[in-house]
Length: 160
Length: 334
Image 1: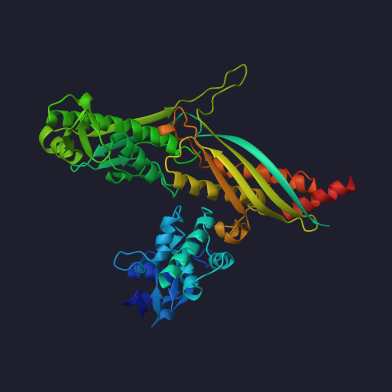
Image 2: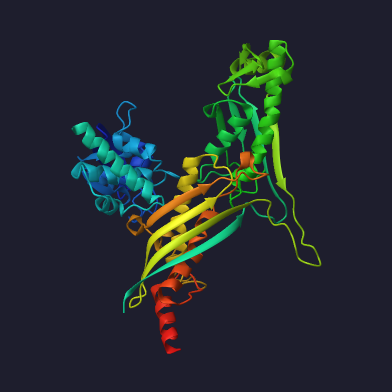
């Protein structure tokens, strides 16, 4: 099968790869680019573990064809920390022990980041709504919700 | 037709580990040349925190900081034997094996330190920060880093230890059938409050209040995670999870977790967790197994709460709206 060129920005740096046509963005990121922070849970768009941010919008990388991402800016959880310093959202997940086995965590953080980017001070209901597309098999939703609310408070204190 | 409220309570005790043909786990501990310690296990960490707990147990026994311990798990080709991480047995069985292995390694470490310091090994103690001191004369000390270097390059010693923990098979008495299936039990009690819509049969869980007695909580935050998640999995068992309508004919059944319903973040009820610590006699530093136990008492508590709310006993799981409506219909017919 003919290879297809694809170019995008991943966490601020230019990436260019030749991929098989039909490759999902999830597989392109993990197997070609080497960013394994998006996780392959269900590979059919129900678990949210593969969530990434494409041009500011939350997207499921397992249902996104890599070749449709030409020219986009993609953010993954591995690109959040700057110079080894965690973002408040990541710090909040650590501080509130919002990971158990950790498999859903990158997707949860992506979903929470998009929420906080658009709604800096969300209500609990808004947090629940934003996370409703992400499954945690350890059923540890309560600490995850608390982590997002904690990060929102930290952000608003920094802004004040 | 109305929304009716009910409250149910249930208490359980739950064995740690199982007893089929005997229940063993083995562990090996050795130091690297720079005085880090390696724990080798076949036990699997599938997200429950086994590596962290085994590192803590090894560090506590040898007397070094936890970050000086590396835990290698889950290679059954090369690791010492483990029956597996199931039956809430990982911390209890592997932890005991790690203690035994770490004690043996600690003894060699102290013997090498004794030769370096020209004292008796029984006069030495560790400070938990990576140093070995003479009891009562802490100015006379040596770092574990230097002890490991000495053992490797000067004394020709292996700072290592072997550990094994076995719960032997218990055979039932022929006359009475009595046997001892486990040596260690965790306990829990749950009070659940529900609302039942007697027109639709829908159950809404309002609050779940749990008390868990789990021996010593070796890592309290990880225990809390396990219990909070487990409590909600118990609700899931009670109300949602089933392989029906496919089982036992699986031809058109679900093939993965996507088709096996569990609650999401929108289904959470107010959940309270209280941990009671009564150290177990044969557990590693008093630990028991809280893993499976924590998802059990919610099931009878919810069933009892449904009975309290609408007066019907549902004895088949999950407690679906259909089962409640059928029971209400049967109740009305009587």
